[in-house]
Length: 398
Picture: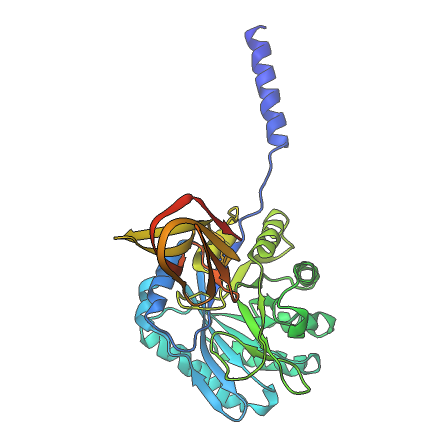
């Protein structure tokens, strides 16, 4: 092949490659809601360990309750200032909008902005979280237009939005008054039907993308709740704070595997105007019903999810502490059974959540109640004083 021919072939190949070049969609932004009303020292580690994977913090800042008035979240401004991420203050308006004094609402929001700025915090925006009924959307739009007019010009205004609004002809006008919207697709129906439906979330996102011309986000769940029975009505929802009430609790938990698949589909083929995903909520180390931060980070990054339960034995002078560790990135239920091959045992017992059956040369720990081992976490299940525990012949039964 001559030199000129080689050049022509090379140029043709480059042209073909250029014509077939894949233009990947920009990665979806990942953000976090911080929803604790009372900040604790646990926020320090949670913020620090989440910083690399989530660009923006949407922090519950202020809440209006019917009859009860206004309540500010007790944040830690020093932690937020040190964190340095983009910051959006969320104002939750409970109840009916017409029951609130509009002038007082504006005053409360402006005072909050001023106070946070006075503490050295740079606010990128404000998000209004209000569950307006469809019939009230025109009044809500007027409220938002007025709020937009009194907010500092560079500050963005967004709203938490409900899928039910898709049925209203007022929705386009409402969305025109704000800079962006956050479509909440969890906990938007009767809790007895579940916390989240992936197929419905996809349908709502596509429908939303056909109506809005501005950026929108999806608010996705990374938590669980318990349903408690009530007399003749909807169940009572229990989150992190325990409710003193008799009756069997029904636990609901957003499935990380299901959410991971949804996020992968959205990354591969995002609806028009979808700017990112916002996860509810930042988990703290002592949370009972939130995904661990390790699992949340893995889902947000699109990592392959897996859990690996391992038996841990710690021995000192014949006394063994027996535990289970989760060496994967996916939170996992406590194992149903753990069997230990043993010799010469003088005594053994189970710890809370497990019971022990002892046979010659075999100890069986059986789960009594449900629980989870966080990704990277561990749990003690019992102890034994034995001459030998053969770890290789012992088993963890999920």
